[in-house]
Length: 207
Length: 175
Image 1 (cartoon, rainbow over the protein chains, first blue to last red):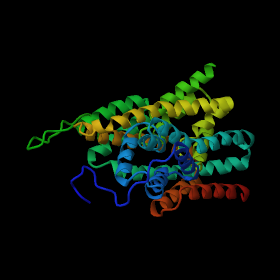
Image 2 (image 1 turned 90 degrees about the vertical axis):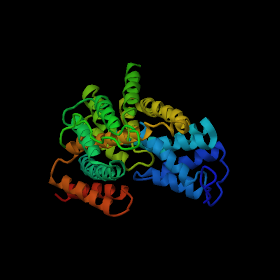
Image 3 (image 1 turned 90 degrees about the horizontal axis):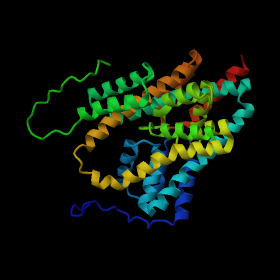
Image 4 (image 1 turned 60 degrees about the vertical axis):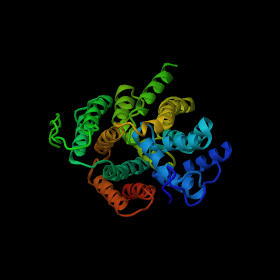
């Protein structure tokens, strides 16, 4: 890869941006087939490998934005990729296509639940999948943690946030802004060069 | 009419809390839908959440179920728009600003700070869910087995979840 242009050149040329209808269809299919979470992996396979609408560099960049903003990652990714490809109408159809299949299924699930949710057999099924979902959330947590937490202080921010919300029932926005401000300040940009690294202790208790 | 306004308000607010994933909003989702508004019971909420893990697409489309249970199809539509539109517009706007933010010296600090808080919120959501779902040794074992399977292998997460449900059914029928 040459270094002269700002961005490395992709080995394969990107495909031209699709029509709005094609874009909607592609996201609708990805939104309808990405069973079991991990939509981001389906999106990468679709957008980067299969359709070649984005290169990996752009994909990772969009992913970073999606994850630091509120909103569901898969929805955010679809909106950003759609905007990149076809401007705001692209963002609209990509976001819609991604959400429609799952939303329709879950709306139907509510009606099915109203009919059969009280049956003891479905209760047994639903209770057991709730336990399975706890296992899944724990995996997501470990993976998210491995990616996001780089130093000891980060674990303290995690414990502080979770403790405030889950045990002390502090409203989420309060915990988010309070601990968030503390964590951002902790990682604040510093002038390069020798300087004292000593951090004021803040108010973080031991985890 | 008031009910639709409440649904829109609650889910618009919840959407702003989904940093790092839908699970981050779970404690507040429970607080508002179960305790404040009594739209669903806690078991119902957990059931919808777990069913949502089996549905394709973004992982919190289960909010549509709550909307549908409260006010039918219009309820589902109101909840979805409220849950997706505000953060969607925010993402769209920030996405266009991103290049200018690239050289902002505080950006890495903000990203790392938000990262820790996001993991903490997902952990809090997991704790709230676990307190409701792990109601006996059988369920604890299920959760641990699913965790180990998913962390050790690369199978589709829907598979162990469906299998847990099948096991739950099996235990129900044979006991």
